[in-house]
Length: 194
Image 1 (cartoon, rainbow, N blue to C red):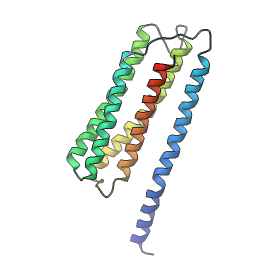
Image 2 (spheres, one colour):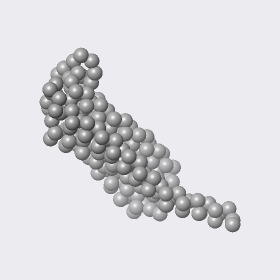
Image 3 (spheres, rainbow, N blue to C red):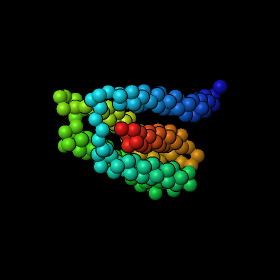
Image 4 (cartoon, one colour):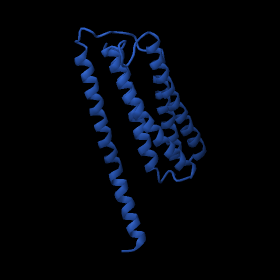
């Protein structure tokens, strides 16, 4: 077997296993957040449960993360057409919107503190601890998504992607869209279940 044939077989094996491995990791994240939101629902029966409105910054961050998925979607569409430059610009816009999401999550945490709702300490409540804790765990997953985006941006800049070789881009996009959908679920969960 020649070196080139071996390399092609290794590349094919990587392509075949990459997406299923990503899906398995995303399923485990879904189970993690399902457990957290289930604990939230069970804890709502406590006598010390406090109901409050979501911070306005969470609404802004929701719009930003949805827009980031839109820009990433169009970036991928343009890459499939080998429109590398515009695809790259939209990828950078996705990163900017993702960073904006993280910023507005931080602003939202501060809005909660400003009205006397804390994660821990004597002023904390079970409900604020859950919302801040779950939201913070999502932000950590989104930061992982930002690292993935940075890798995709680097590889895109180095012209490693094309309409015929997009596996890394596709994997990064799947993860980013997953984190987006996860936040939308959490946002509506917190909005409707108080």
